[in-house]
Length: 232
Image 1 (tube, rainbow, N blue to C red):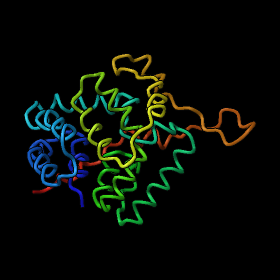
Image 2: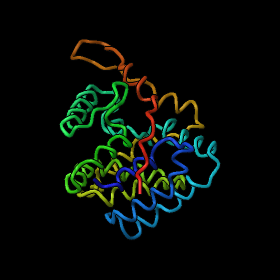
Image 3: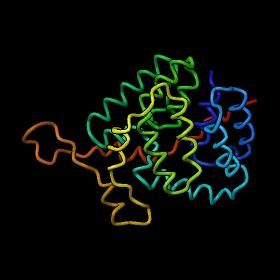
Image 4: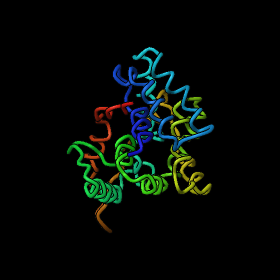
């Protein structure tokens, strides 16, 4: 089990007092694992230190602004490649089946493509398999990293670390295609409403506007409990 993935999962979860108290243990777990080294490892220090020392309410507000209110920074991986299309539903079913084959059963209200959950799954996989599976998402991770860096957010370091751990490196063209999508600030309410507007799901020619995938829209806003922080 690679505790580095568990620690990165915790760092990407909604900040709580329990996570803040566990910040030193996360740093120690990453160091002891030894699978993340050099600059990608050192660059995690600011985000870990921020979690350990900043005001909790400020941390929570920044987290919500970034990951809950900004669609282009969504922690739901398939949001970036499938949006609200029917393909996303099948992709989530396939991912959930992959979890179950490895013995990870998730809560019925959880979306399988939620990045902290995905990293929690990788933490129970053999390291080679985990890095190869992570590599399938590398272009998404790289695009989010660039958007966070533009906002001067320490969270960018977490995504850089994940790209460094990926067995497959992102193709520049794939990252550029994702970066062409709108990147709306949560303070731009009109643009935000337009960006989060559900698109109709059609079932074939002649179906008109079809129906909206309301279940995904509702579950997207749900927050799962933070994973248990890695122990020393």
